[in-house]
Image (tube, rainbow, N blue to C red; front, side, top):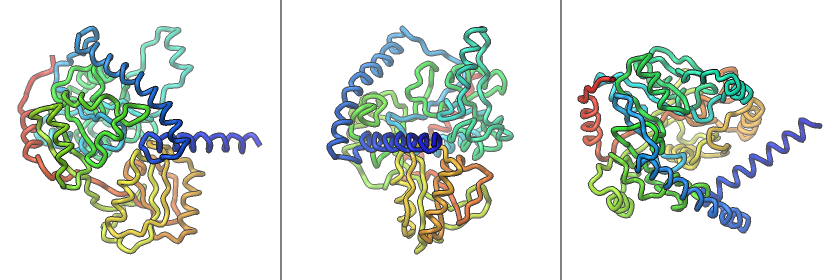
Length: 399
């Protein structure tokens, strides 16, 4: 009885969370959505004051950023979720590695396993030092699973072997010091660090999703902006991701108005192949044509993933959408498998990010694949190569 009640409460909470996300992305326009939207808009005014005020504290040097004595490259965005940041970080890290840099990626480890609350309190009471940063990869092997490390850090660690270190900690100053001291790195990449002002950076790479640049133009929690659009003036380079290759004068004008003369690099996220979840078998994308497919995802913008499948000729029979970074339970997966099998689908397909959250013990009763996506340049590839070359040529040493 208690278990059933708990399950119902959890379902209602998930439904409300999904409804809230739909309001933030303006997917719902009914009366309940407008009421909640009005309340969230009021909160967004408070968020704006805090966001702008925090930046000013660092600009006026009331709060100070720390120098670590090595190159620091920030990859981030103005919005929450959905800009395709991880493939850019992967491509940048690989390019720097090939040019002789010793690279560590620093991530906060979003949605990773947290330290138990009782242990935090115990540390405060006993004045015990905080645990060291988590080493997801030491450049030779992956040392943590996705639940402990977080989805993106684990995926980056797995895809960038050998050579690139991946370290997680909310305090990325501490993580950077640790990477320099223990591993002797000379280049730090801050994954999702555009709003992390505590660490002095040298280059800011700002990603903008061309298909949905700034959402509805509102700040969190009414919209998807983390800070006002005009703050893109901090960018050293602007990457337009998920591009369709068509010109967008309005977006380019906005960028030019707030950051005159900045280099704009345009790219698309190009599907490459399907690979078995927790396996090595691959299928070509042409194998999707005419197949009945179920799509399962827990990402911020599931429409882009589902559109990829339809683009390659799949008949999308079922859509299973979960909240961003949702960690799947065995019961949920069993329900997905059962519905997909009952619908007679040929393949169940998920994203690579979601695939790392599928327990290795899970055995799907139907063909279960993830879609591998990589970056392809549409414009500004020379600018990217030149930027990487300039970074690689800077041989400043760790102090």
